[in-house]
Image 1 (tube, rainbow, N blue to C red):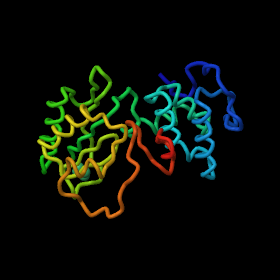
Image 2 (image 1 turned 60 degrees about the vertical axis):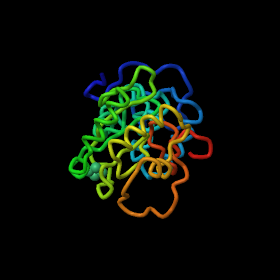
Image 3 (image 1 turned 30 degrees about the horizontal axis):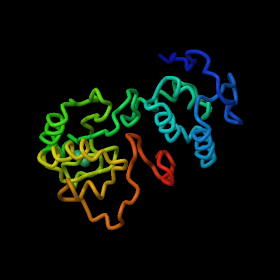
Image 4 (image 1 turned 45 degrees about the vertical axis):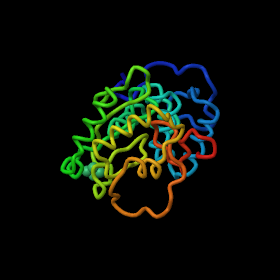
Length: 236
Ligand code: FES
């Protein structure tokens, strides 16, 4: 556990020194991250007048680097951002998209908040759970599928809404939800794309999105193209 005074658990493992990114006060540390991730971290930080403002994108980098968010990952973010580990943990623990446990290759998130609940969101969730054999909050043994129910994902007009690796599908029925699970298991798409999944498994959309969404996501980490957290060549 992180100490509540913001102290660290112990020394970080050996790695590359953080050039110019160590805390202004306190111990200078080394980085566990790959050179590419460090480069992204430096780039993100350069976009803000204060480096602590980059804490959220850096948390996604930490999550992508290790497959989930670890204490060590938060300590590293703290070093990059000039914050204490406890401050970083307080940010990370507020948002459910920062995963402390490994998720499967595909993360299916079913909204069960009010609009979706009134439109059959619970039935969609149960269909996903039954078909996949994975209950809410769990991952199958293969590390392939994770299932969760989530609060409003901002698609109330197209309820019930589902995401796969944070790519949105609106107007999902229980039958289509079962088809979605079957498709993921069979097709094992390298990239999941909201437009494609909407076409295959969606129904009513909240509005006409007009501009095609071309990128999609390669893993259960938010693939914010402007932030470069996607791990696909050319997407970041
Ligand atoms: S309540 Fe489900 S998207 Fe808003």
